[in-house]
Amino acid sequence: MRRGILSLFLLSIVGLFIVVNNVEAQDIDLNKESITLSPAINKPTTEPGAIISDKLTILNTGKTEYRFLLYARPYSVKQETYDPNYTEVNDRTEAYQWVQFEKTDIVLKAGEQIVVPYTVKVPSNVQSGGHYAVLFAETQPKLIEGTQVARKKRVGSLVYLTVDGDINKSGSMVDWDVPLWQTKRPIAGQVRIKNDGNVHFQANSTIKFKNIFGRTVLTHNQEHIILPGTTRRISSTLERSLPVGIYKASGGVDFLEKNNQLTSKWIVLLPIPAILGLLGLAILFILYKLYGRYKKRRRGVKITHRGKK
Amino acid sequence: MKKYSQISNRLVALLMLSIFIMPLGVSAATDTDNTTINATVASVITMTTSGSVGINITPVTGGAQSSASDTVTISTNNSAGFDLTLANSDATLTLTKGGDTIAAHAGTYASPTALANNSWGYAVGGLGTFDASYSALSNVTSSATKWAGVPASGSPQNIKSTSSTASGDTTTVWYSAKADPTKPNGSYTDTVTYTATTK
Image (cartoon, rainbow over all chains, first blue to last red; front, side, top):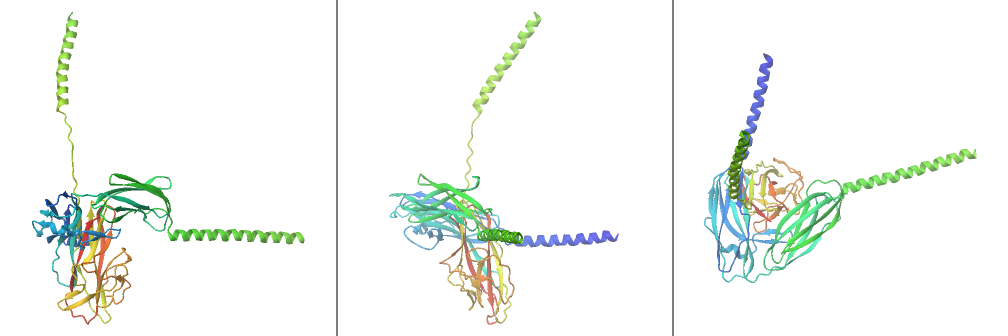
């Protein structure tokens, strides 16, 4: 009887914990704010003076209602790592001024989606080639009491617009760099591609990492857009936690209807602690050998002494 | 004779059956058609964050420091990956309550430092030069953790850059403030903007 009461008591406590934990989990989920934007990339082609009609789909994939704004900004990049720049205005990034949304201030309930049409009115006197902008959907934070950091979340749809006319498509592979000795994971290689033309182009890269036995451990396929007047560094990393050893990287990059082979390059993955360990072992081995010689000599001396006696 | 007629009857029946089957086969062949299924998968990018980021401080002389985290989750089917940047939503970098402010910390993403008294900042554990050892602080008077001031809207900091498709890639952003009793009580706020675009 006592046992029965005790087990019932224990069971009810366990049940209570489960209920409390579930409520907490639900509370966290209920505050989750999520915004999805599609397309994330758009590459229209048009003529000077034309009007492009297109649309953006925004989905509230979170658990809470929010208000969001739609607007366009310039898009360019900084450095070869292509850090995005959403503020610099130049003759290739003024396209954001041509964008007109049908709606710009929208409230979306959890689970709802909306399709917002927009137009891009291309001026007739615009220079031919690539023009770049980003279309943002930005959530507006709710006011909550207490000292806090409110957060706006914005996701962007990149627009790579080509205006027909005097189009110059030109580019080259600058280099394919894979450091031979790599001291930390992930092991990496990088290829640099330069765009000398006046319009963007797409580079499709395939980089293969093989182990010392020739077995492919990773094939990394990537598609990158190279903007005019820039050089882009495309990095490929092997994220897996690999054992220390010897690897090989090779592959190819296709762009502007050319296939550029990436020659095989060796990689020695040897982190500093492994080097120190090896050095330690080498020192121990040398010490052992020296001790062996010393012991041998001492034995020899003893034998000669005995012989003299 | 009867046997022969039976055989011939069977043969005729077989012949008739084969005549019926053949046209059926032919008509079945003519009815077969190939349908090409085309599915266009649109490019998408999703950003998800946790609830509010509240920092509660009970100030003491010399400064008390508290922190709270936000988890930013990005998903995209773009094979080149995504960039995630962080910036203040405007040019005012302080936490503000009317005319009272808590200054932005002087440390930077490239060179974060221990949080100065009466300032606030952010850290991205395990990324850039931040170590991975961040956890929630509650009114501590001394902390070895390092922080950076949130940059102005015009110069966002790229806090994460990936090179492949992402399915629920998480980044934990920590916010911290340190205050002493010279700061009037009340709710200090500021707004930051996370931006995610494909590469």
